[in-house]
Image (cartoon, rainbow, N blue to C red; front, side, top):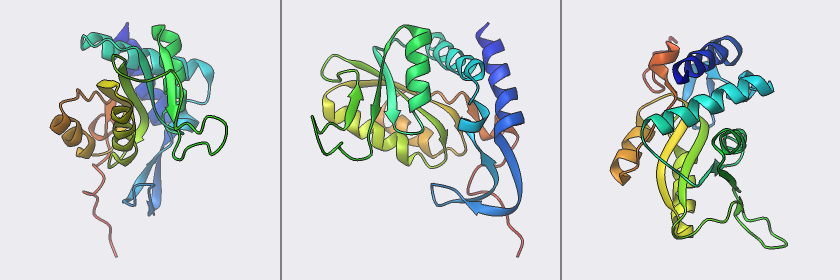
Length: 191
């Protein structure tokens, strides 16, 4: 069943989220690519998002990893934090890029993170891993333990190297190879 969820998610992402552009564009990471992956547009339908969250939760469960809360840096992690919390009966959290500036002035919203809390980091499309690495740093600052990280799609091998170095299992649901596109940083542009 988990393979069905993954295959369906791949189909949805390719059909509704992957665009080949005539000219390279700058990605949020600063890298240039002719391939743009819009995970938010691809999964904007509730059923499609649920399918992806089930696939991600199943991949983590298949790896034998248990967690208490799922989350990551807003905006790329929000839908997966909430969706995985629902399908896996766990808590969710999101990490603000800046503290709120009023009220409790928190950076982490949702589940209370701290010692003894096992965290699954989530993100949508990872290129160089900057957002998910920042999320990792913020979670560690709370005293919680990152037990794994999962992403909808990874466009390079940079995040995998980071998580290997810090001893955290990294489980992208799909890679650039699965999507049939080159790794970011390896594309050759004419001109």
